[in-house]
Length: 336
Image (cartoon, rainbow, N blue to C red; front, side, top):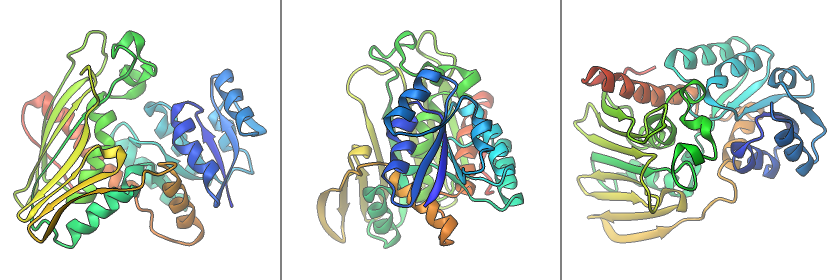
């Protein structure tokens, strides 16, 4: 059993990392930290955790903590990761990793310097539906990849306005670092990298449409690959109505559609087999597989399915998109 400490007791802890650690047979959550005493004690009481810290740095330095799960606003990912890796602790960090490529690189270098594992919680890679889609693509079920696309609308509050946003920090640049192209884009762009590979360039428009937003709330992008394949990205925070969240990969012999993405429904249309819709199992915890994989990488030497080097590519696309929007021209994506 690997002893985890978790920094941040908000929603990401409740439904993501903390849940995965608590359900795992390979990990033990022994310590938690949050600057909000009410949230800290409520979470610790619920799961009977004795070690409680108002400072994440105090948690990191506790001798019983072997690994740290970081689930706090984005701007704190880098300093906490540097502190934890420097203290010899393994780190599993929430997306989007750092808020710049430079931060990402220094986080990786620190982990290597201190011989500890570093992972990023891009948990959707572990969905049975995504693994199935990747298998079909790798087997050539839809032929040569020609196009991809994704569309996601994410709401931030009951009335989808900044004033009622339940997690307001997500639209505050000094805490989030960026807006919807980063927030909703990170998981989904990671899947494009996982399923289609690394693009050669990105061109995007990132805009603030809604009143009161400090970051982009409506963004679109286009990725181009060396093969000639293209992918479009459409992401919105301000759309009212039913939520949309789908990802599609097209090839010369068919297409694969994941819609809705989080309901693990896969539609396969191929000239090589009958068209079929698959209703895959929705995981009890989206992060349980990533927790188990992370522990196995430490204790058994297995590969991390979402290594930080992949997260750098995703962030190069995201921050390249912002640069592209500012300059009004495509930005090249270089491999790490």
